[in-house]
Image 1 (cartoon, helix red, strand yellow):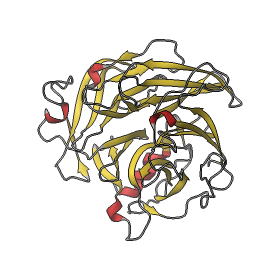
Image 2 (tube, one colour):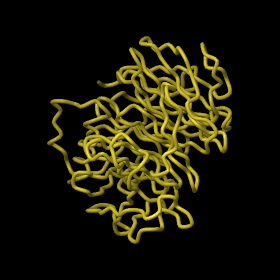
Image 3 (cartoon, one colour):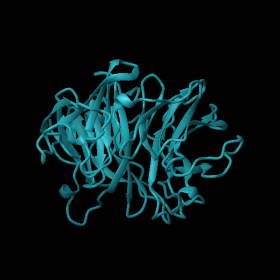
Image 4 (cartoon, helix red, strand yellow):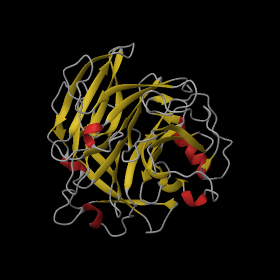
Length: 386
């Protein structure tokens, strides 16, 4: 399957949204290329310091170490990975805290009009909670990014206390993406020699027990078939999980991970690539390779979190040289959608759409000050393609 077709198929189904009636049959073999985005060029930064296309506006919904308006919760430091969940007639946005020893996750609850009605801490006293992923049964998987990091399953509404899931492996976790078709969870590892994993629960919907597997392929493979092998000791001690299986394919700094329509997309910051795992054919391919961009063309540097919209557009966070959020259309064109001038010591984190697809949440992890205590979480509204 060619790369453009892979991109279109991956973007066609986003979360629980399926683009019925949309044809993806006219794909042309090519990698993603820079071009004009569907919303036009960015305007000058608004009053919140956010540069957006015409028709889009930003709102600050939370700042680190400040009380969330209308609640009693002080927003956490270093906001990172996030996701939205339906909640009655409104929704909940969950955000991780990537801080040492005092990490965890918090949740903002919105009413149907988008007003914050409550906020709460749903995970406490964990370590370097970076990204994660939502499950089909409505929980948030918060992943710890350190050598013996764990996955913690949390309940966005706070109805149950968070639970560690050690069967999913202890390693430098980054992101997670659930594949309900094959009933597995894909996992990235943020190391220069990190691996790509999948967890097979013994019973779908229960992550307390199962088998951790690692992807196997030739060391320099950028496309073609792959296999999976069980990790003998998911606990990762004394031998790290990435070193337990011969032939495990190393990826340079695994970051964001996103599943849609039989494809799992994941980013690797070390080489600025976006990968696609074809779960049906059990093959990998490159969706974005900076080496395929013509000299002088816009590139994506420091690719990180990734998510999708109801229209099938992909949104990819870019950390360097300054925080930006890029948009990749189903046709394979990428462009800037959002920039944060003056936030050079920060990162774009936690992009996630509200269930109706009309609002996008995203954070500047360290704000304009470049400090964890200066994080800012924004809400972006505008004419998103639906």
